[in-house]
Image (cartoon, rainbow, N blue to C red; front, side, top):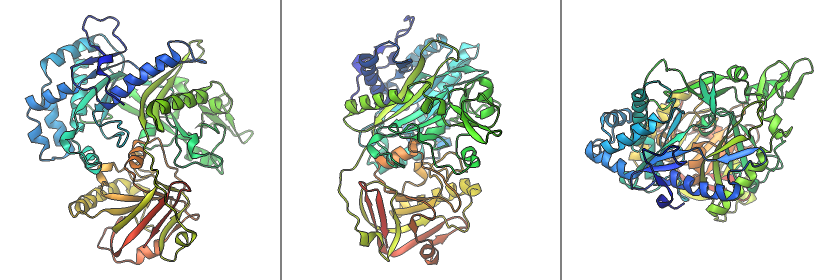
Length: 577
């Protein structure tokens, strides 16, 4: 999407009220801010300011600091000499925190913060973000601040710290690794910063939207009667961090909103649906740490949302007396975040709105798109629900035709064969395999496994040895009990990935996660192995001599390279040894 700086009003200290989108500086607005600016114009043409079937569709107001201030900040604090040596992330952040922002910028920021007491999301808007060929989803930092202290100077300091943290994240290890993977140098990126109102409202000293979601117009893993072109939606209670970090969410096809997952028991419903939610903490945190992205966030149990009275339209309840799961919260019992009152009972036409917005996004982008959004409303109010569009970005799909014959799919030299593969194409030449052994794998060691993978990845990158990565659960999840919590920087040498469900377990992919988005746009083949259904020759792997080995990881170097094939049309995938 083009950079529409001429359509954005400059920030003026005397403006009251301020325009919905303003800029500080004369440089680029970056990909994210430019995309939202263009989208706002499209939304105004389609919806105006009118109530659309019970929704007010809008983009939360924001001010963007253009990239010229990033250049000036880097130069006046001599930060290029710091990042050139590629120090650890915490050292980079410390150096950036000690830097001084340009004086004319701090003057505008002080006036801005003096006139708003709403919680703010300080978001990256790099020039490389949201590009059609390599969008940087979740690569850079976002920091939310409560912005509710009585002292204006205290709120100003929190804002400045958050801006510096976002600037620093431009050079964190995950960002460097991703830029290298897509062919950019460290200096190809320039960072603009968005200062945006957080969607939702405050409830009992915590601020959050009732619903956050990610909607895609293309579904890489359709289930049941769903088709890829019908799209997919992930929904969660509270802030969208639950989704974009790969946590438990409710996933459904917009063409089949009433379909439910094939859970076998009430226990499955309780274990495999959302149990906690994220909110902005509106009281002073117990531990102040400007270098922590979640410094002002809080992770809460569902009982807190029940107390806030925000579950009426998003939850179902297990009624022990009838041994049934009932939509809504009219009866007492364990709550289940199923969104049944909306998707099955039809209390609001959310699904219809999502389908229309995805269509609008596809028409504007000329390709399938992914949209992040939030939804909030007042209970017992006639006011429309506020639907906030937070981001929209294109999805990259491959058009290459690949055929996997029946003989290949059942070949005696197959290492893996599945009908649940993501991607499209053929990769040859990989001779290294990094995998997690079945016998020793346990989710309680996920954090340790992530650290060991980072060390091995660093060695293999230096030796220019791309590898096949194989493991259990959900790669990239922020919840270590769902999978290994790696970011892209820790596994950036992987050129193909395998995700297997553990024996007796079931962890679905979260297509709304930033990790998943970048995986698809880097065109990395991804194989989903369902235990007992798909084929993976674990015994052959375990018999091979390891080049390096720990309790949790084995690294194999093969005499002959692998052949990796994925047919994106049939979703069949095979790896031949």
